[in-house]
Structures are given as C-alpha cells and as structure tokens.
Length: 75
Image (cartoon, rainbow, N blue to C red; front, side):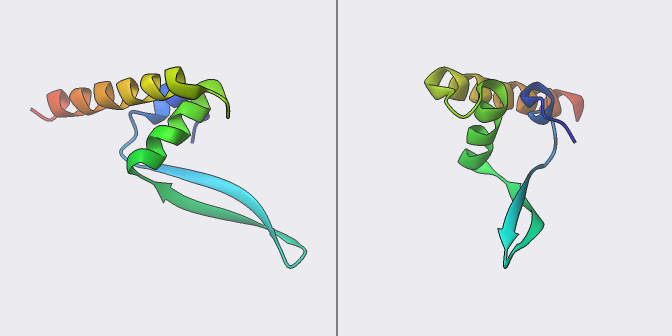
C-alpha cells in the first residue's frame, strides 16, 4: 500500500480505498481502478485534487514508463 504515485504506477493492480457512512456506520470500500480512472487517481496522488492537465500528463507518463519497464523485465 502506498500514497506515492511514483510507486503506485509500477503496481500490477491499483485499488482505491474509501471510507463511507452507511446507515450511520462507517464502512471501508475497496475497489480496483483501471484505465482512465487509474490515470485520474495517480494524478491526484501526484498533485492533489486540483492537479490539472500537468498532473494528468505526469500520471500518463509514469504509467507508460512502468509498462515499458514491465515489458523489458519479462524478456
């Protein structure tokens, strides 16, 4: 588990963990994020909720580098 986007980008799977209140009780919800949602989550990890286009571009670049690294490691 990490809060660092630079590390999360290299994970094989990414999950979002949230606390929610249901019927007056706090529950924890865990769900896998994939595709564009993963880019958004990484961008928020890198620059906060208001990261904007620069954070999104950085997240996309990190995921691309991680994918290239995975491909080169499996050879």
